[in-house]
Image (cartoon, rainbow, N blue to C red; front, side):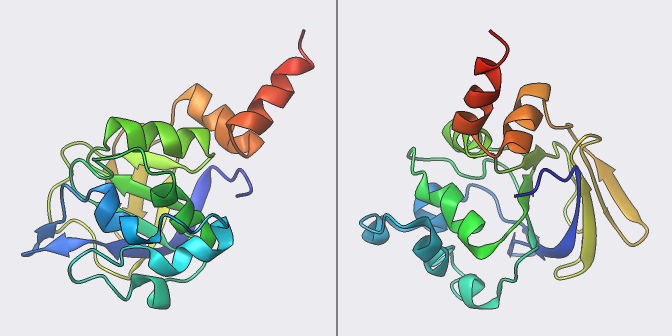
Length: 176
């Protein structure tokens, strides 16, 4: 990623039964059958391969896309593949009402931006519409619709700008 604070791209609105898809666990994001894959660039092909209705996501996703989901995105195991598969496809960020704690930490450590939009009503955004995600404001906007959630934290922002936790740690060494 390039450290941009305002991301623009096509929005994947993940829905189940007409509502934002909630409780998407790490096995739905990246099935455990593919955990032997260790090259990040090869992980993208398996993104959402186990998520009902979105098994073709990897074939249809385009670099620059944004993903929107409901509550508890990334619950389950501490599967780093579930973050890296999006990075491999060039997905810029995931926005959701909330995130599983381990997924949230993995995303931040990887320099992959996530934004929480607690209370986002179902039906606010349109699938595949162009959207703008302002990380500093925590705002998702598409057309005349906008919703403000939680802005990226200072630490998450610094790690994102640096390109990941290890790169961020290197910036701290110079400050000693």
